[in-house]
Amino acid sequence: MLRVLHSVSNMARAGIETTLMNYYREIDRSQIQFDFLANKPVPGEYDEEIRSMGGRVFVSPGLNPLHYPQYKRFMAELLHSNPEIGILHAHNEAMGYYALQSAKDAGLPVRIAHAHSTRIIRDYKYPLKLVCKQLIPGAATDYWGCGRDAGIYYFGEKRWQASGFVLRNAIDVSRFAFRQEIRDRLRQLHGLENCFVIGHVGRFNVAKNHSRLLDIFAEITKAVPEARLVLIGTGELEQSVKEKARDMGIQDKVLFLGQMPDVSEWYQAMDCFVLPSLFEGLPVVGIEAQAAGLPCFFSDRVTDEALLSPAARRVSLQAEDAEWAREILAVRQSETDRPRGMDDVRQAGYDIHVEARKLQEIYLEMAERSSSGTRLQV
Image (cartoon, rainbow, N blue to C red; front, side, top):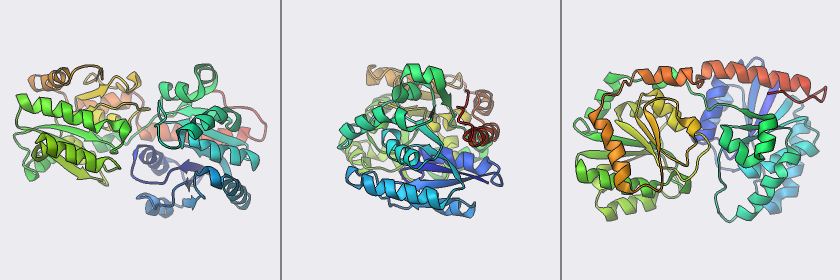
């Protein structure tokens, strides 16, 4: 049996991790098993499910420059003790270099660098991340991305055009299909029957741009006082967003629902989905929202590859809040064929049942070609 080691932050309930679990649940686990290299010591919500399916979670010494020698020793010992691990698949953006280079030094023949974003966050590790980003091509054997723009950002257009591969952020489309009875139940339960409900799912961090979302929503409430904003997720900026909503006097119109084990039902209760991100790879929540048949409004920093249905559009971040509000409120004047969303997403190639079989074949081919030294042609 081939085992694939996925290098992640930890297996929390976030976009990258949720996509990995979508694939993990669907592959033939008698042929391929997933293991996970967690680079944060914090347990993830998916850990228990991973172990129940036969996977393992290993915890590294962390992505600290001072721990790099220790990290390399850890990886060498891990791969030596588990020779059934034939592929490293790194999802840590620039910091994936740690796992990739360590695996290369340990002699692992297949090492995938996977790009999931179109920008590096400017935190205290920013200079280190820039260096690691430049070093990834020498450490990886294969260059994957959630989409074209993410791949080009991390690996350069020339390398991406020559050997890049898109692994789609596929979902279980049928789970998000529109269901009127769930919509009615949730809206009644939360007092939303007569409200215009705007939804957002995402971690409270810089990329998701919650502060701008509040500004846009406040503009919407001027025209539609019964509008409500549903925010699903947690993160380091959650408290500051709550404080801004209170300072703006709209806190009673904003529902902070926190982390949820299954957001599929809440998409049913929404009337539209708004994602004014500062940067993204290809957001899985946007795919889920479109599968639920929702009109979607993405910022122009979200790749055009995310537009899978006629009900999805991009709006410039340079546009005024009032223009965003007009675009969003226009959906109240038109009929939306919500059941169609499932077919739109499936036809666009984001059905996990189909894509998982493709990934399985690719992994097995990669493991086979590793002994011959030939690269996968994509």
